[in-house]
Each structure stands twice: as structure tokens, then as C-alpha cells.
Image (cartoon, rainbow, N blue to C red; front, side, top):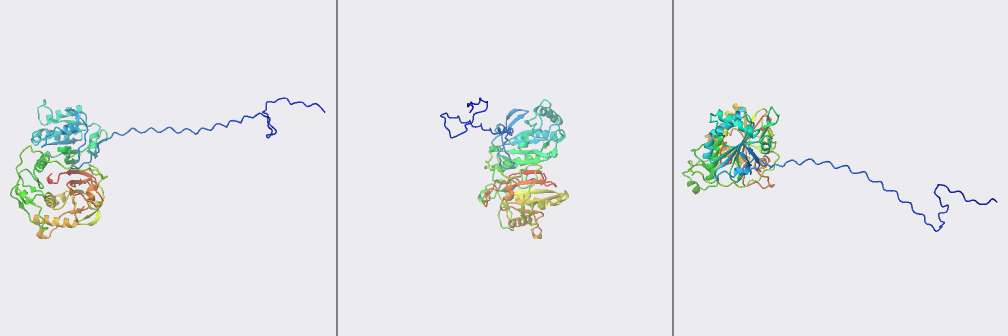
Length: 462
């Protein structure tokens, strides 16, 4: 047999034909395959820059005014530091203007400068706001003073805030979306006016459209009322002026009322004693005003500002029973809605009578009138009968000339932001802020609003 020959080595790895055979040499175990790395996570999306936070301000009686930086014709300062300058018997009037070098605004700024002494006599300091720069404000004031034939070397008697970016106007709910600037297509500020009293609280608000100039004689009338009612426990009736009779507040006893002077009481069918008149009391000047209680801000979706869509809600009224509010807004017509805290209150009763009397004039203007009060339909009917009797029409079985909506649960007033949030089933004892005057346009948006305290009657000539 041929001799055995070992096969020549090859490059292939040697395989053991018998895996059970142990030749004393351990074969190294093959290293495991490296794990497949997972796909990388997508890079995180960059977060948007945080929006600048601004104080939340809801227009309402008793709301604390926010603080903000003011760049003005009289230097730069924080708004609260300006409020700190007012007297204990005084007020600050902040009023906005749509734009410099416009005709209506020029007449208003000029009127305030001319009336400056009248405001100062009442302890009122003024500060205006317009959506232009400080330099433009200074140039504009020269035109204003020239139009009023004031010495050109004099300066305007109060500062003007520059709000070029409309940030302050937006924060305070001053913008009027139905009036747009032709140049930048941005909404113009409404003609907002705030009277701010002690504790930096809003005591009165008037919102007029950009195209309607304000009546500053009415503002002075209201300041006189606020001072009187802030010093003495009385209210001023509808259309009141200095020297007219006043009405003692409901909680005053007969003894306390007699200290104000001889009272004349009106007897009414409801049998309730709530309408007393006394002669205009004398008040010493520069008396500190009574403090106003803290009022929590409302939390409704609806914010009172021009152009805001007026909400719809279920309501029960003296004329239609249960219905939706928008059913009361007649198609294509303007509507006035007056909100009162309660029936059988002296100032509100004088306003109720005046509303009935001006109905013919409102109809001529195509205006519908509605009332709302935090009371029941049954009380509304009794209250209306009292008013008609006081007008001398009760014996003729005539009815009140407009509809009254009941809000005994206060849910409607809370939804309009006039009252703080409600605890279910627990109405507010203090309903004094549930008072407002709205003009609602044919498109069901707010076109004008006024918020006077319950002790200051509206002026229906205004």
C-alpha cells in the first residue's frame, strides 16, 4: 500500500470531524456579533419663544388697575407710581385716543387742557394715551394748543403716554376692531376713559367708539357724584346735577336719614319703603373718600370691550317668558341693555322711570330697550308697577314700555363678567358691581359701554 501522506495545509479553517473528541486544546468561542445600534432620536423641535406676559385686566367696577411702564411727554415712569401722586380725596383719569393728528382727538385733548382747572378743583389728575411716539405727541400738542388759541410757549397740562405698538391698549381692552387704521390695517383704540380711585381701583369706565367724541361735562358731573357719594351715604338719581335732591341709601335708618335733612318719602303699591329724597347735603372739600371693598375678577369667557360678540343665554323675562337672549335683539336694530344689581333700589328706580319716558325717542332712532336685574320676574312686575305709579300712570293700568329680564340666580351677570365667579347655589350678597349700560349693534356686538357705581345715576341726555 502506498505510504500515508499528510495533506498539504490549506487556507480554509480546520474543522474537527468529531466534536466529541477532546484533544486537550479548547477552541475559542466566536465573539458575538455587535448589537445593531438603534436609530438616533430625531432632534427635539425648538420651543417657541415665550410670549411676554401682561397683567390680566377685566374691565369692571372695583378691579385693581395693572401696573405698566409709561413712556410719556413728561418722562418715563410706572403707572402705579403716577397713581401714588393722587390725593386721598382725588382720582386719576386715564383716557385713550386712537391716533395723533386726527380731528376728533385734537378737540378732546384741547377740551381737557381748557378744563384742567375744573379737574384740579375736584382733585383729579389727567393722563392720556395715544398710539404714536413721544416725539409725535409733542408735535401734536403744539397743534392742539394752537387750535385752542393757547400760548405756544406753554405745554399741555398733563402727560400723554406713547403706545406705538398698541400693547397697553390691547392689555386694557381698548382696541376697537370695527375701526381700522388705513396705514397699517390695525384696529384703532377705542375712546376708553377710566376713573381710578383709592387703592388703585377702577371706579368708573366709559368706552366710546373711535369715531365718537366724549362729553367732558358729563365726566365732571360724574366726578361730582362720586365725590358726594364717597363722602356721604347717599345716591344721586338719574340725570342728577349738583344742587339737585339726592336719595339716602337703603340701609340708612330713619334716624340716620334725618341727620341729612328733611326727607320726603314716596309711597308705592309694593308697600316697600325705598324711595326717599333729601336736599343736596353740604360736603366739605378735600374729604378722604371711603374705601372700596376688594372685588374678585370675573372669569367668564366674555370680556367687555368694543366689538365683542354679545353672548347668547337662556333667560326669563316679563314679556316673553323663557327664551334665548338673542331673540330679544330685533333684527337690524340697535339695542340698549341696562343691568341693575337689584329691584327696589332708589337710584335704579329713577333710571327705570326715565327709561320708560325716553322710549318714544329711542323708537325714533330705531333703538330697542331691555333691562336686566338680579331679581325674579315677580319682583320685576311689582317694581314696574311702583315706577308707573310714581310717573302718574299706574291708575291707567298701563305697563312698562320695555322688557325686564330676571337674573335671580346671578348666572347671567356672572357670565357677563359683572360679578365674580359663583359658588353653585350660593348667590353673592354684594351685587353692587352687576351694573352696566351696553349699546349692542345690529351685528350683536358691543358698540358702547358705561359702568357707573350703583350710587351714581346715568344721564340719559348723555
